[in-house]
Length: 183
Image (cartoon, rainbow, N blue to C red):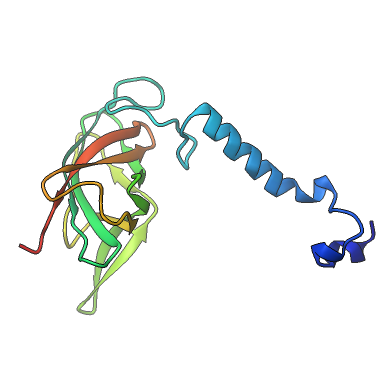
């Protein structure tokens, strides 16, 4: 196969592209299939675990409380979640990501104030120092929820499952109450 064959549209090629030239896509497909066969794996390579245990099987020292999800404005597919993280361990931990079946993706956000303007910014993680509590609340740190399932699988006052993934505590399952903050 010549170089010219490689740049021609697929319908006019005399032979298919050699297997080795598709290595990246093949590797990605194999990893997705293996991931599905071996169980759910988070974006950071940690196996998802139940509430209270980390990826090493040890009991987590991270406590998640007061989790709420703001009901989205009708017709919108974005919202925010707020909660409290308490690290009762002797070492710092870091919130890396969050996920939920009812949201396409979730980002960790902060608010910054500059020249009288408040801006929302995504951050790559959230440190939770040893023996400290970090609160995610309106106007400050929060989880930004995108691509919400319409309608959400819960009504006001009911709970939605939410998974938070940490560096040391692993992925922890919690629930967040759906609230209407417009009232």
